[in-house]
Length: 155
Image 1 (tube, rainbow, N blue to C red):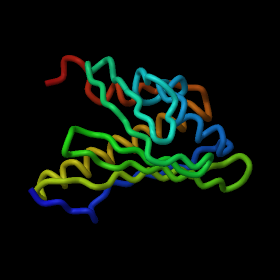
Image 2 (image 1 turned 45 degrees about the vertical axis):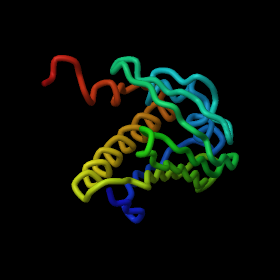
Image 3 (image 1 turned 135 degrees about the vertical axis):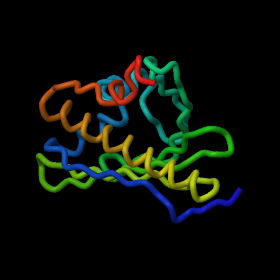
Image 4 (image 1 turned 180 degrees about the vertical axis):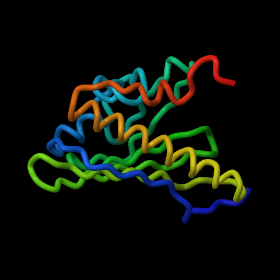
């Protein structure tokens, strides 16, 4: 199995809220669960693991928080053993009321077809997460994008 470190998925979005509010939305599972996973065991904390669950899919995973730079950056490691990838959030305040969020998922492993599939899925997934975060933070609307991406009854 080859490792290709220069392949990555990236999604970016302007969210019209202060950087501290946007940053907390990804640290605090009580907020994140409004637009991404359904349950988080605790706030992200540097050097600690937490469990994120998508109860509608019967799926959970452990996330190891590698780096937290308050209101600037979050880096986590997640995935199946031996296939962990790195996810990095960069929070760029454009002014007191606007934050540009960039999410990069990297360190995909496998052959070219597997890596391409993982990059495509991660790009789509994080784009939905950012769109959901934007709707919730700016307008208090829960779009259920992650839930509705794979509805029951669809083969």
